[in-house]
Amino acid sequence: MSDDSALAPTGVLVSLEPVVARLLDRHLDAARPWFPHAYTPWSEATDYDGPLDGEPWREGQSVMSPAVRDSFTVSLLTEDNLPSYHFVIATLFGRDGAWGTWVHRWTAEEDRHAHALRSYLHARRALDPVLLEEQRMEHVSRGYAGRHPDVLHGLAYVTVQEMATREAHRNTGRACGDPLGEKLTARIAADENLHMLFYRDLYRAALDLAPDAAVTALADVICDFRMPGAALPGFQERSLRIAAAGIYDLDVHRERVLLPLLRALGVEERTDFTAVGDHARERIGLHLEQLGRDAARFRALFARMNLDGATTV
Image 1 (cartoon, rainbow, N blue to C red):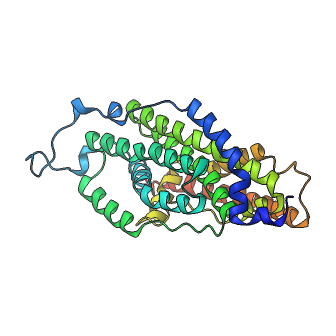
Image 2 (image 1 turned 45 degrees about the horizontal axis):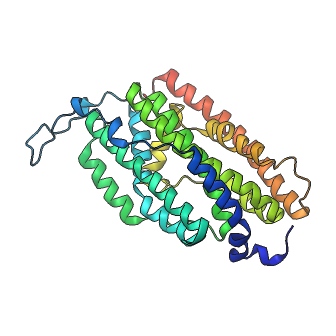
Image 3 (image 1 turned 180 degrees about the vertical axis):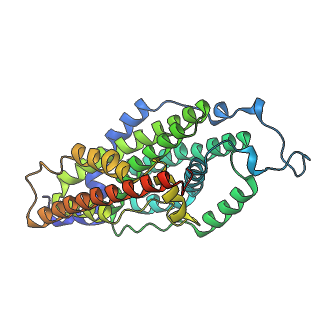
């Protein structure tokens, strides 16, 4: 482990900045431009009521299942809160040097997602546009307050969150039954994947810099992880419907998010932890075991619900 000065926020930022610069160059080489307007079926859209005197939205116009609509709603409203996310990471990482360049580049890329999703969903008449706008106003007005006490916790959170968001977008598209919707969500998921690779490899460097502190921050985040949209109105009910449909459930979170990340970070194989780091690694293992038990219980519950016809996803 490096000396204690590297564990101060400024020390972590300074020590990791060369890695940020290298990963930023890699990201810019890998990123490909894309355009939200190209994923909107303009020729199939019709005017809404209001100044254009079009047809008001009605429930029967959406061909998507309730669970898919829930998932698109959560995804879109989460992406809408980008101003708060930018503030959080700019406060954590700063706006200067390689860190600042990354923060602004990340924000510019993320800003496409809400625009693309909203245009697509409006054109498809998949969601009530008035209700969606009311929910957006409420959610964005509340903002988002990161629960990250330091840089390492913030980095750990975005590492897990980007992977989780990638899976949520990708699985929503696969479940929506619309080839265009699947292409759009796959394109957004590709952005999230590149963001995850940046943060994952940066976190690997953080583990080398301060093994005990970094794995402890990772354990804290994993054991108390919440998606950034968890404060949305009705999130709990929506997340249950989304889980029942298999779009994003505890199995996805454990098998497609946490386990691949932990393998990529080499957490299990590291030999440079003291007792402090070993304890954090043990906490992660116990949490994964509990997630496995909870996932099995929910699978059985959802299976009974479907067999009994108690829910339609």
